Image 1 (spheres, rainbow, N blue to C red):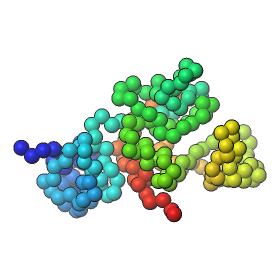
Image 2: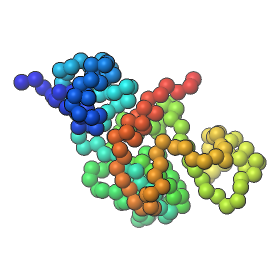
Image 3: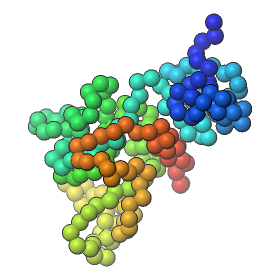
Length: 207
């Protein structure tokens, strides 16, 4: 008996439509398995094979989860805290074990991604992939041009100076947003959101 599942079945389970629709995606050459254009009848192992549609990875591995958490103030962004403070991991399901992608300060409130997808985490956080992080900070008053300039040049912190940043007083336009998520609440990412993150993590950075 052939090993693995039929590719169209895997794609349908991942939310790309009916099996017939997924067969059409394969026939159009829009699906790759381990970098090669797939053909109808291809079987895949969801644990080992990398499946992509239009260049974006498909989250087909069983057990992978992606949580969007609105981190409340006073909660630290770490998997464990030696001082006994509440952590972001305490606010989401305990199994499977997940880790935060990036960091928000303890006194900061905002959206944070947690996942057990190590590959995606690496691509989103490692500087070599050039994935930009965009933050919206609500402050009292309007920042002066001098304050904005200091942020652009880098700010001195206890552990050194921050890297230069692009700063502007503009409305938010991040790829992950949810105004209905109250502080301390979380939800699972949609398949479209996961694909969007993966696509962003695979863009070639400007050299």
